[in-house]
Image (cartoon, rainbow, N blue to C red; front, side, top):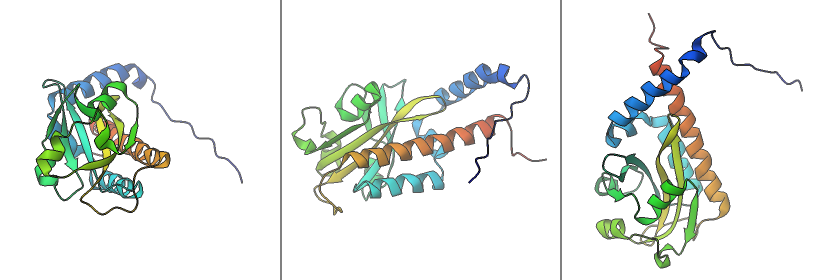
Length: 198
């Protein structure tokens, strides 16, 4: 089997524009509320996430995006039955496990989470359900940390197995990475005006 070497073609002088492109992108991201930013995650990316939630053994998953001005992580997408009540929920940064994952930028997995001192059950009480296990991974796109993706098992929902394994964390982290790449490609295509057609 032969290996084909590929090299990204770069227009001369385009590299000089990279800092400006990053500034423009950051400015646009910071001007958008989380509810608008989540619309960047198209149906293909949502399908990847939903498959990852299921493959990891989760009952449902949530995309949390940072609202820096408010100092909160906002639940902008949820794949579960209570999505209508859950989306829009705001978790103060510095409170709960989701915030810890955002601050430390490290994946987290815990079974029997109800016994964890770091678990904030405010959302559980809001939807009248009990989280028993959780995976949470940092979510990056547009050259920065933008939020967290979490996957949970609930006591009241059917699940394929009890608890999560380390392989399940890898499944969710890999999906988050793929979604990051899809979003970056889409954002850069739009920013550079590629594909607009004439």
